[in-house]
Image (cartoon, rainbow, N blue to C red; front, side, top):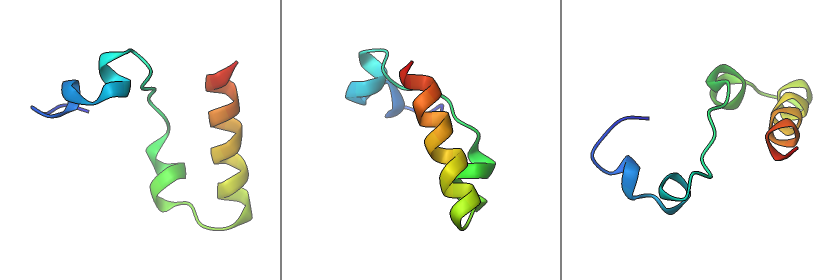
Length: 46
C-alpha cells in the first residue's frame, strides 16, 4: 500500500480504503474463501 500512485486513488484520498487479509483475497479459492471475503467486507462496512 505504498507507492507514488497510491495516495492519488480516490478511495485512499477520501479515507475509504481498508486493509484486508491478502491471503484470503489473493490465494483463497472456492466457497470458503468467498465466504471469508464477504465476512471481511461486511465487517468493514459496519
